Image (cartoon, rainbow, N blue to C red; front, top):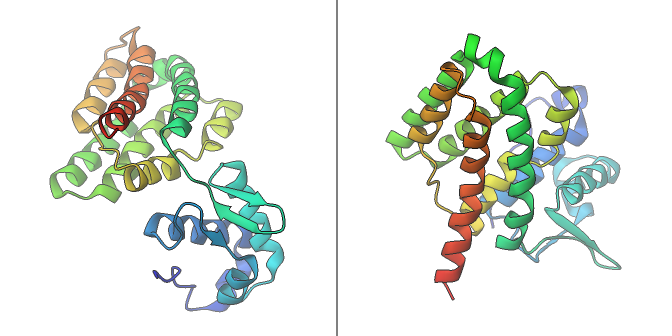
Amino acid sequence: MVDLPRLPDDPSKLAREPLREQIRQVLVEGLLSGRWQPGERIVERRIATELRVSQAPVREALRELETLRLIETVPNKGARVRDFGVRDMAEIYPVRAGLELVAAELAAPRLRADPSPLEREVGLLKRATAEGDVSGQIKHSVEFHREVVRAADNSVLLHTWESLGVEVWTALSVRWLNMELHAKAADHDQITKAFREGDSQVGRMLSDHVLNYVEAALRSNEGAH
């Protein structure tokens, strides 16, 4: 069994920061590390004991993960990890693609004037790809998309996009579904170029780029049967 990530060496640090957010991150890291597998229970009392906190913030964090559809609450049995599959991707990714299409259209003037946030993430993504750093590829690929949504300068759009838990779902897709990160730095490079040149089709390019993940996963799933 993989241990939970370590708590801060200074226990008072935990008290100064939002407990719910810290606990949520601990639980997510537990999912990504393989501590909990699909269908396995997450015992609220045990987590509270390990983290030396009350059960209330643990319960709040679990509710947030339930909102992200990462866990489900079973009557009289508590929380357990959802059995995530390609069908979930087929529901989540089109929604994400639609949001990013809108974001790209809103962000286009700003990113044409200053594409440096995208260029920075593409550079880091290239480095992670060259080093075979899967975690880095996930991080900088998602951060590239986040920069587009931020540049749209629409708080409702950003909040809705963030509520999808894009980074978590991407990482779980790679680990649980063996989804390949086919969208390498070159794809992000082309999208950055389209923003820089004021290409009117950049929104569609970004949307299609996101949907390609689902199509690749569906093809892989069909080939496995």
